[in-house]
Image (cartoon, rainbow, N blue to C red; front, top):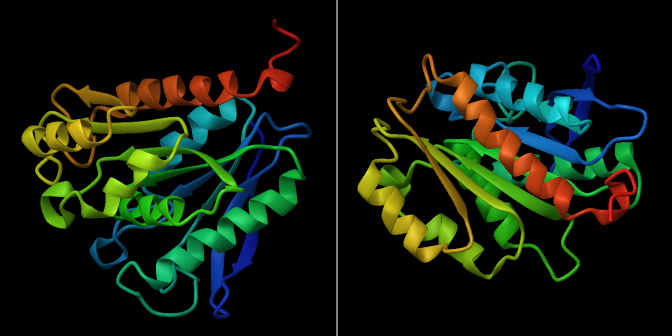
Length: 226
């Protein structure tokens, strides 16, 4: 696994964000990972975030995790999910510059991070930079489906993964979201709650399946496979 190094991101409004980048010599792609709610202890060292980094790195992807504004050494204050969209955009820009042209990029967000990542992807123009999205435990019981519905028109590999005992993404709400996003791959991890205690391995398997879908969309980067 490529070691991570500390980097600083700069959002469009000047907020300086603490981040860690792992960059293999010839990355298969790049993944920006977004952490859970800052006001409830969420940061880039969350075990779910770290597990996603590990899995994506195993596939040769560059990874970038960061602290939203106001968390850790990141400057600024919590922006209720609005200003945090700028944080994600800064992370995507940094990773795009680090990996170079032609390397596909994707987003993975956990809980609050899933909500903000979905909003960023939904606002993309036709020449989209982000070509894949993983929503981990999207808090639909709190936020409703509205932040995610625009994804129905976005043709990228989309993963939704949640636990069968997730109090913020209960099964009925998850099934309602699945009905609105029929192209999404939905994985329910039996016995997992919102925090995936004791369930990081099956979570990693779900993310690995999504990462394989990202690879399959990149014929020129599949080792010459026909």
